[in-house]
Length: 324
Length: 314
Image 1 (cartoon, chains in turn red, green):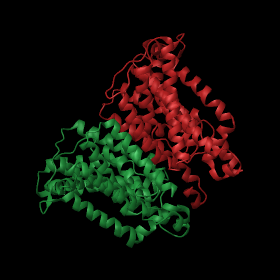
Image 2: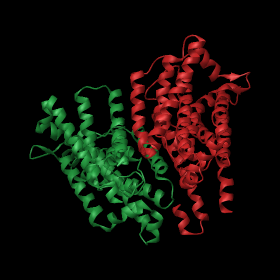
Image 3: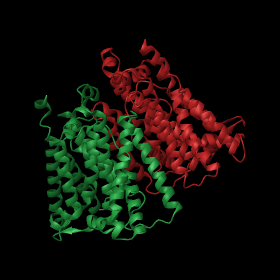
Image 4: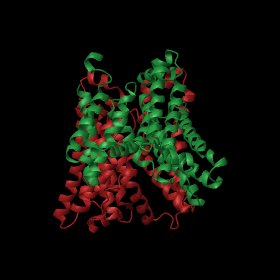
């Protein structure tokens, strides 16, 4: 009974996060010098997209009760790869994009193998693989530079028929094609089950190992879309671009209502979490608060948002519930 | 169980032996590695990481993690050096060290209360505290003209030499190591850390003060980070932004390389010391060989993976 109620509540796409996001958006476009136009909406969407990709990837690993601390490094690696491969003739560009996504998937596969078959805890294993990925990114691009096809960049960073920002559409389509079919199938349910109670899932005959590996591969794929999109935004590659993304993606996951203990949550909430972080940054910028104070305010709001999750303690009937 | 997994001290021994082998093999090609001066210099470099890792280990033994290390170091160093330059060296300025350590303890207290009382996952709460501390530091140093001047105590801890050979930082690291070892083996607090890290619910039901143990461990970790920041400021003659960044992940890696389980409940302090020595030596060898940063990162990652998969196989 309790489990059913919890299950129902915890898979809702984090309504709290959406309410906060909508309030922030109202404020954002109210103080935006140009108001709500398709251009300002596209710019907002472009700022959100790369982090949203990475955060959704991170969330899928968190569903399994894992954590991918190499996800920023995968973003940097694929970003550098995009800055060397995604240019030239349409065929070359298509090959480049495929190679970038493939590299992300390969990084994820390595993470999955190390964690599942190497039996190393995800936190520390991905710190190590992250160092390796950063090294490879530095080999590809020792100093920031390179180029990304401007035509593709224009298509994906502006808008579609002056109606919707194309980056938002890209994000929605990729998430629907890559994650939705898996989420609805056996593998997606196993991903959630592995995070909920791994022994029970294993004893029920679910492919737990495969699900955990697939979760890391999906994280790699989503991170590579993040890296590709960052390349389209900046038209270059930078091996150090991934550092803030790892921690921001964890923050987005938590703000989006996904518990770090796994087994629950939805990617829609995670999108809201990522958008909150980016919108807040933009909002502080436009309100003209001293730039020096912005990092503090951003940190304080993150802290308060995280601490708000402690409100559930007020509802506990038994001291022991606290320890779960 | 212990018979199958091997002695709990095994990882420390393995890491010590690999460090020694590495030193000998490299020394055969590059004789300067055998000189006492070089080895003492390496110990000095290792000591900063060692102090951070000592604090990180207490938290990791509880199954938690302290991501606020970088800005605890920086904030403690920035504010205490600013205090010293405002108050003048000598006299009341000598309290700068106390201020720095107090900041570290306060940040540790905030970390601990959030994790133990509010039950926020340590990974996200310490990250939030780190971000807020960075915000305060950025605002303060940007808003006011902040001079950074370490006092004589910090200079002594960072640059001083005992008998003209052993750096005072190493002596400090040794003292902290002694305290942590005694703490973990001989005090109630230390003995409580292991059961709380293994299963907090069971520990609570057994009547252990689990909240107090968690808070105390975070306070200790915060003070270790602050101490590392103060000595580093003494060594570099100033506090600077991002001074703590290179210590966060290597600190965690050193603890885990030494055989402490990141899930908590298992680990010996000797392993952490061995892990710090190995990481420092590898870094030093790679920089002597002038290996580019890219290859260095790759080798660094592969070593952690190799050691850890070796532990998990046994």
